[in-house]
Image (cartoon, rainbow, N blue to C red; front, top):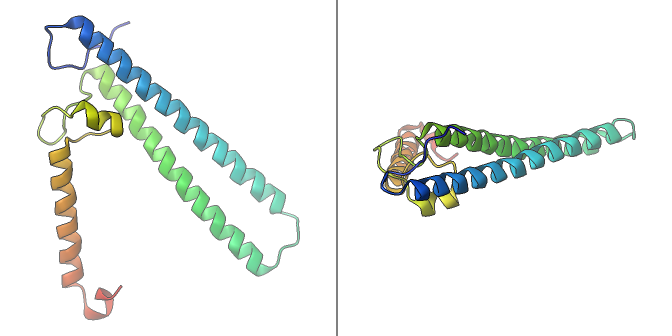
Length: 151
């Protein structure tokens, strides 16, 4: 098995390999769970749509069901996006880039990686990014015409 250990220290190759194996197991398990949820929920939506196809609902019931289906599909999409992030993290793990911040190049703490296994930024860079996004949204609201600012 050819893989690069994801640790900054090469002084303890066994520790690096053990960490790699733990991370790989954690990411793979998370991916399997997400994949099962996505496929199961998609099957559920399809089954519900098929079951409702011929049961003579009025327009209000149809609209309500359509809205519920859209919400369920949006939630499935979010899980699918998370699954993609987990799969990307597995690629970074195999490439030896997992656990390095995309912004500053520093190490992402193990605590953060356990909480958000697909994290690509350290806590500091993520907080800076979120603060910048909040400032940009506030600036956009402030610069919006008065009739849009209330929205």
